[in-house]
Length: 407
Image (cartoon, rainbow, N blue to C red; front, side, top):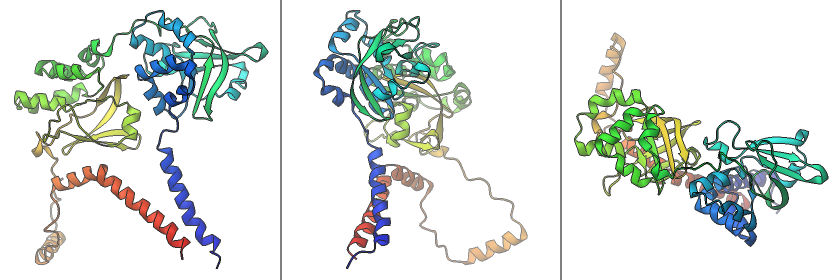
C-alpha cells in the first residue's frame, strides 16, 4: 500500500530543516585546509596560523582572502616585521565581504572600497584598512590599500577556491603596501593593560588590579589568551563600601573572577553560550559564570547578579577587554547578596480573607526548590542540561519521521 504523500512530507520536511539548521552551526570552511591543497602558498598559510588570523577568518560568515604565494610573501618577510605587525599587514589582505572572480568583473562604476580585517580591528585610523578594487583595461582587476595614495599594487591572478557568498580565496600578484599596517606594533604582553582601562572609562577597576596585586595574574595570561570584563567607573565606585569589607585574598579572587584564561571575541561569546571558568577558578573553588545571549546583548550571569557587556576597549587576539555594567559577584563570596523579593503589597480586607483560606489549605509546595537550587538548575539548563533538552527535541523529530514511514 502506497504511503500518503501529504502525510509523509511534513515530518520529512521537519527532519531536513533540523539537519540543515544543525549544519549551519558548523564552520562551512577552513582556510588552513583550503590553502594546504596549494603548496605554493605554504608560507602565507603558515603565518595565517601563527598570527591567529586563520581562526578569525574561520569564525567569519563572509570573507575574501587575497592570498600571496611564497615568492610574494618573501618580499614581506624581508622587512623583518614583528609578528604582531605582520598580523596587521596580513589582515589588510583579508576582506570582510565576498568577492568571487565573477563579482570582481561586475563592480558597479568600475571601482569600490571595501573594509579589511585590519580596518575591522579598530587599529587602523581614517580610511586606512580599506582596500580599493578597480576593473582595469584588458580584463585585469587591480588592488591597492586606500592609504597608499591610490596606487594599485597588485592585480588579480586566479581564484583558488570559492564558496559563493561565504568565502573566496583569490591569488593576487603582490602584497598591498600600507604605512599604517607596517607601523611597529607592540606585542600584547608588553601592552599596559591597566593603562588601556584608564584611558577608556575603567580607571577605578584598573586601580584595584594594581593595589591588590591581581594585575600580575592578568598579565601572565595575555600571551596565551585573555578576556577581561571591566566594570565601568561608576559601578566600581558605588561598590567600594562592600569591597573594603573583604579580606585581601577575597579581593584578589573577586578581581580574578573578571577574567577568562582564553581569548573570546564578542562574536565567539554570542555563538558559544554556557558555563565558563575564570581566572579565579581553583579546583573545587569553581568561580564560574554563565555566558548567555539576551537578544543582541551578551550577558554574564553568576548565581548572584547578571551583568551586560556595554562596550569593547580592546580586541586584538590574544587580548580582548570588554566594559560591563555591573560588578561580577561570585556566589563563593556573596551568597547573601542575592536580591530579595519585592515586598508584598499591603493586605486588603479581601486579601486577608483569601489568606485565611490559603492557611487552611494543605501546603503543596513544601518541597519547592530554594533560590540556590533554582539558580543551579538555570545554570545546568545552559550547559549539559540544555543540550540534553535539545537532544530530546531531536529525538522527537526523528521519532515522528520514522513513525510515519513505517505506519
